[in-house]
Image (cartoon, rainbow, N blue to C red; front, side, top):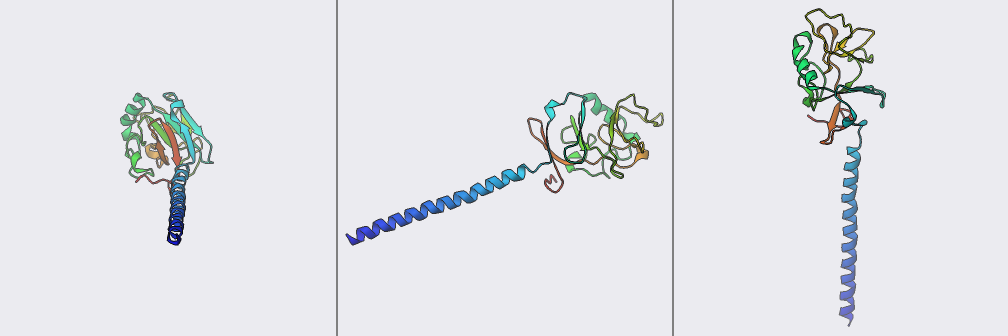
Length: 194
């Protein structure tokens, strides 16, 4: 009878240890899941790109750094190829952007352009300008609309590429676009796509 009581106590002890161990392991793995969720949520801006009409441009001021978001048309993308000779860095080899934006449209998805709306050297805010805007460019330089900074006259196309005499291309932040066209903008330290 004494050995039976000891066996029951031993079984209860093992059961207690098993339950305690299971709870401890579950808490650890739950903590990892929670921390990864938090890491995913460390974005500066979330924006629904489906809310933009084709050709629409918005400049957001949510983080202290203005962000320009544009939905380009197929014609806009064709025009980007037509002005290469007018640009200082058409392939963005000297510019700062994630690796997925080292292309002529400077974006993850060609349709959407996302950049900081500040001139790289001086930090003045840019504005969107229509095709009719008087740029002061030479006759051989084509203008299909884009961005400008009023104080210096710096000009950029619809991919944020600078015209020859004007300096560096606009800075592209790190961002992610989900299959549902939800935009998440991160700092370079928080998300590394390279």
